[in-house]
Length: 182
Image (cartoon, rainbow, N blue to C red; front, top):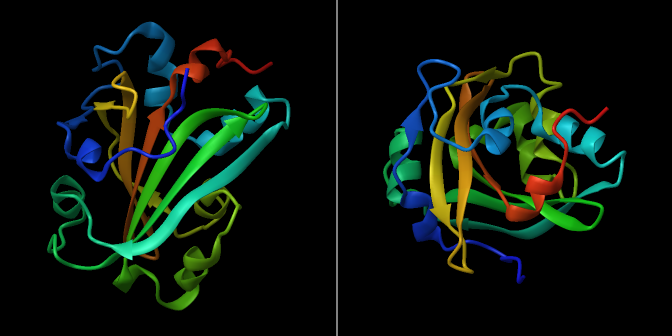
């Protein structure tokens, strides 16, 4: 199977559903725990891979968000944002494709460091920041470049009350991974 290097920006303009109660998704059971967990996905992937985990930057650039992303961030869709796309690999297999949208106004003060993460996980920064707050999870299905459908989730994070939108697309190889990790 060919794994997508990236998804098209249009993939992210799917219909997103805000979860009002923990089990409010029609996702197959195999995906529910990944989709609904509000903790650090990075930490779960590191544990599931017994430490054989790494972040591969697909691209990082200034661009425009999708309409859906702009709406979620409550910004003008023509506004330039920092777009960071990465693959999260366990045992050298792409398990998750993650896309982060960061408005320029968020990249001020201590949050400037988000511009220079390189191959470090965003999750390690977010979940160590005492000012971090996470908005509600939204779940949707995206079409991969291969034509396959994949489950995804997204949520707004706030660092010192400054927003960024994180979308995580769960790739087919992750189905083989035990969520329990232990």
